[in-house]
Length: 320
Image (cartoon, rainbow, N blue to C red; front, top):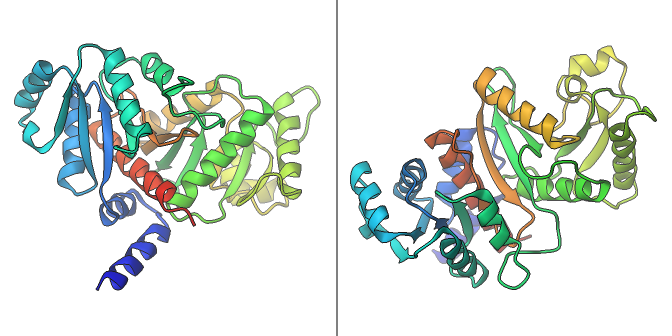
């Protein structure tokens, strides 16, 4: 029986996620991940955590002011009896204790609640107690777009302002690691610019060409990288054919690497607010996944991000 169960779990880990329904189901099928929620007295966050717990994805440790947590839980109809609550006096203390619980292996991942992003990341990056790995941290997002045929992954909409060449290498590696956690074993990566040709006056196109050559020479693994691409010829086979672009990535990119945070953030918000896309995000590059959602994200988006981070945490604990 145990062997059959383990075989099933192995099959679940490599199942390709091709929709958000599959994303949620996959997160339910793996063992529950334990999440440390920093300043959990944020109603939308607490509701998403409760839904993820009820659906069998996670267990959670709530770090925050107990009195405020009890007030919020009462108003939202959530029982704190289902959670371990760590009473702390400040956001800084909550971040410290939550990060330490992840670093010490008591929790599998971290989630931002009612705490400033700067406070949380300062603790995550602390040289003594944080979750540093030596790799760049960046936000990895996946989208389900009603008018597009499949899921697409993108970086970075919220972390790295103007990535260097080495940071772009880390961004690709982080995306590939997250992609493998949802069963995308050798994703196609397109490096995005305004145009699809190398232009000496546009540094992003030069770096795109360098990244493609680095992949050709084995310096970037487990993906096929090409670029530069404009967005249209990265995601549309018809657009790529019209411009006579010959590349295994053209029109078929699974991962889009944006040239800077301005482009990434506009792309992210345009998909969500104009194209009604669903989105799930996780911060990759740390010693554990970090669920760091926007206050503008819906409860469902927070749930999707918990699911993605749970699968990422499972993959990190069971690498192949």
